[in-house]
Length: 159
View 1 (tube, rainbow, N blue to C red):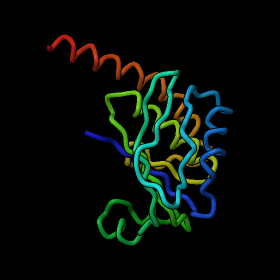
View 2 (view 1 turned 180 degrees about the vertical axis):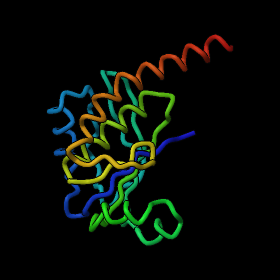
View 3 (view 1 turned 30 degrees about the vertical axis):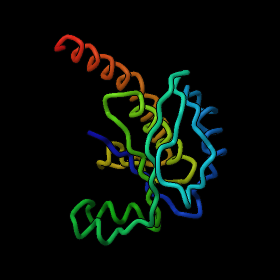
View 4 (view 1 turned 90 degrees about the horizontal axis):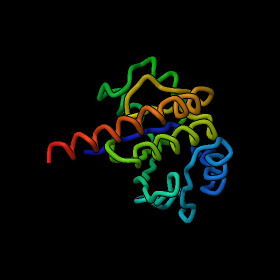
């Protein structure tokens, strides 16, 4: 099972990976993201270290087809309006039962802030705007880590 964090942004506001990584560090998150990729050309795994532990997430980007999302009822008319001219969609895919989920959430929140984007955590609305995304990540991080640890303990008990 995987989970997606989606960020709608204007293609022209997609930061370079080095700028993205630097902003993650400046916000005090314990995440070091690989920077040796071109967001325009690359799709695949981005390795990271989260508090010195290896992890990572899948990275995908594409033009956002908002009319298709609207037709599929994946977004409402109001959400379509809020997305506005954000013509690009970045999707970070991770395992919700591992630290990759936390890493992807942090990376998505920082990308949202840097690009004046809209974040759909877990691929679901409501959206968090650029002014809310970092707060969401900082609030969610400890809760997600606790949930991951609980799931590990449950799996160990059932074995």
